[in-house]
Image 1 (cartoon, rainbow, N blue to C red):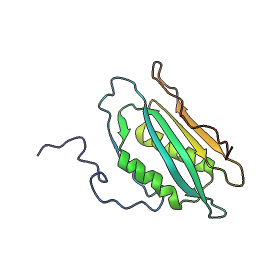
Image 2: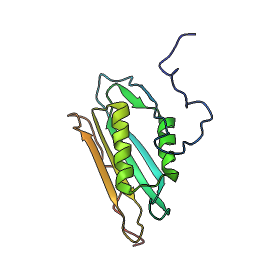
Image 3: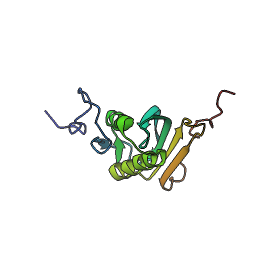
Image 4: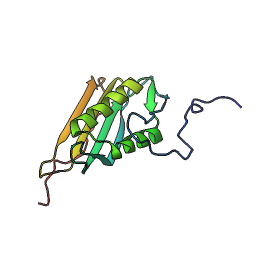
Length: 154
């Protein structure tokens, strides 16, 4: 049997447990089949959860990751498991978003990456956190992230 570019993936197609922490989570990558042409990849995690490092109370966010890949794409199941690993992770909003962005940049080495973390209010204050790395290549269509500012019940 010939080896394919997907043979080295250890999580896809199997029963993989949710990692206990982001540091323990494995982000897998695959070769970009369209590396000769710049394009945008969007990953959306509308039900992201983590916990407050001080109180242990849950925090909820809608996260949007946009990146222009170079040689690699993130494998989506490993990304899902990585994001889920924050469920029992205590960190402030800013640390969660910047660490996700830095980890993706380290693993994928994209031309450009941005992440928007739109946190639901706690104590009446929503916090939005944004991280960007690199410059978006000219000519790549980058739509608005589509997350409206928090308006409460009005």
